[in-house]
Picture 1 (tube, one colour):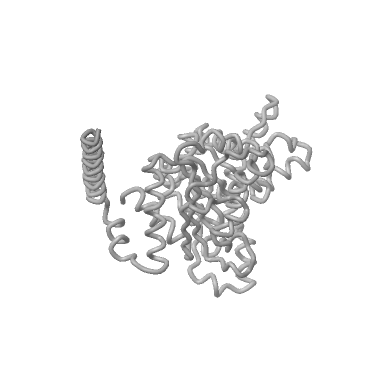
Picture 2 (cartoon, rainbow, N blue to C red):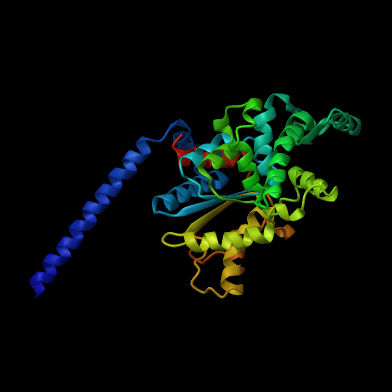
Length: 355
């Protein structure tokens, strides 16, 4: 009997050695396939926020390697900041499974797609006088930090085709989510005549082509949301034609229930605000309010934010605070990079993509 146990333990030990060898070879091959950007950040980003960026990127990568799924949330003006250049490739390569974003991020990616050459960049925006700001308004430009979005070529160009989708749906007695209406608009091909950038750099085009789910909490707080409201006020459309935020949460609960098995779902939060807090709350809602006590916590968490926690904002809340709300587990891998997301997010995506 002892001889049998000895042989069995030797077999187990040999199995561990062989497995470790192949894991090591796989890691070596993986790092050999990394591109120049990834090699640069791995070599130079060793301490402080730079090291936190590297840790978060490797954690994201490990989560996917172990079969996990990932949600990315977009606050701020990431689409106008052209995050689509890297995010679109993340979507195409299956590195993101679901996105939560503000209404502004949803629409502004497409606006950049159809009106890029008409945008105006103002590097010295801090020096603008009130009169110069007024002049921009008079010339139909809306400023986002150093970038001015042209109203006619961006907003109105998209509006014409989006309104048609709303009207067609209402005539058929159909209702859709905000992102579904935008998907229909993009996939119809009607906007191709206006394309001013390579569509491979549009994350909405990539998402529409793969039909990955998007949650858009607070869509009413956006230009297209305001436009839709104006049609409702004029009596030309019904408010019920576009599905609302409660319906998004109901849908998200069902999606999470069907996708949280195994390694689970990770949460990669760019900024904070409603784009982050709305979807992360689906877990405590299911556990506390639906009393689904077997629902797993988010299984990876990363936050890129420059908000300070002492101000009491969600954007500045450190990951451990989310334990008290039933959003994260004690053992959930947690990362926070206190820096500018327009700098950090593309670098993390570059690592995951092997650039």
